[in-house]
Image 1 (spheres, rainbow, N blue to C red):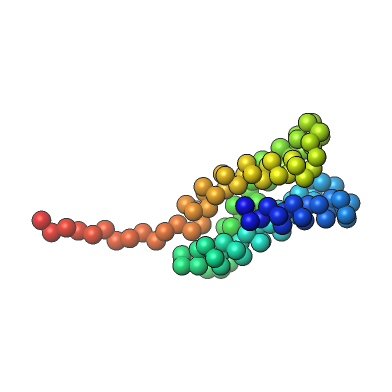
Image 2: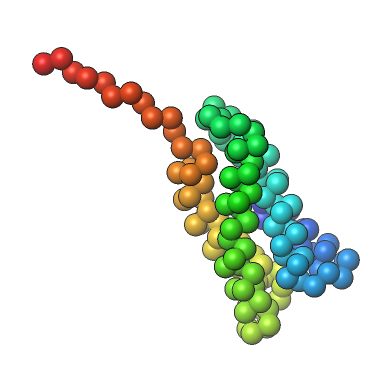
Length: 123
C-alpha cells in the first residue's frame, strides 16, 4: 500500500497538470510507484532475505509490479469511460484490488525463504 500515494500523485500530475491521457499516465504512475515500493520493500522488509542479485530482485519486482497493468488498465478504462468514475477514484479502486493479489505473490515468488535442511532424528 506504500505505493498508493506516489501512484495517485504521479497520476494526478501527469493527467491533470501535464495533460497526459489518463491511460498512459496510469502506466507511468505505476512505474513510479513500483520503483518506490521496490526501494522500501528491498530495504526495510526483506533486507535479510536477499538471496538474489539486486538486478534479479529488481527485475522480478518490476515484472510482478507491472503485470497487474494487464488487468488494471482495462478495468480503469471500464470504470472511467463506462461507469464514469473519476480517474483518481477508479485508479484507487484498481490499486486496492491489485494490492491484495500482488502481496500474496510477492512473498512466495521474489523473497521466498531459503529452504532449511531437513533435520533427521536418530531413533
